[in-house]
Image (cartoon, rainbow, N blue to C red; front, side):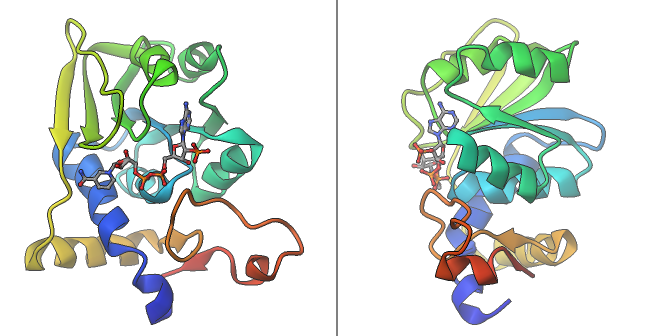
Length: 191
Ligand SMILES: NC(=O)c1ccc[n+]([C@@H]2O[C@H](COP(=O)([O-])OP(=O)(O)OC[C@H]3O[C@@H](n4cnc5c(N)ncnc54)[C@H](OP(=O)(O)O)[C@@H]3O)[C@@H](O)[C@H]2O)c1
């Protein structure tokens, strides 16, 4: 990975990794919904969740977003704006999911929350609006990405271990470039 693309990782990467590891403490074999997975934080969070051995159900924005998060490694993906997003998630995890990382708020997120198993965890970085409503039996964790030497060392280790793909520089609402576009030829980037 060259410097230009490596430079796109820190802010979103720290938020993604700390959401998966510190806020949710995601473990091998657990199931997770990453809601809003087609964006800067989500495309990396999908890969870190896979690195930890979780089963990942991703919600994304539009068909391009769904294709993108599948390419990032999600086991299943749907458009998070569908009214039946909860039915899809329930088919993925009939006993309910262990954890949800919320990177977008609103009705779609509330539908996903209905698929959380009793005692499940929900985390979101501050800035997600509207914030999820706390429900009985749900642990809600709000967090901010923290930077520091140790945090960057951990991020670096995870980037290498995951052979991280970065959809495109800047990661603003990351989406796969259209076929035939100039950006497509060097997409995605790998560590
Ligand atoms: N506190 C912190 O330290 C911190 C750090 C980083 C990020 N954040 C917050 O975390 C959130 C995510 O950041 P980001 O950089 O990943 O943002 P982003 O790039 O805009 O990603 C959000 C993604 O969610 C999609 N989305 C919106 N509504 C959806 C729905 N109903 N179902 C499925 N997908 C949906 C968006 O698609 P469209 O673009 O098509 O709407 C976009 O792809 C933001 O609220 C940001 O403020 C906080």
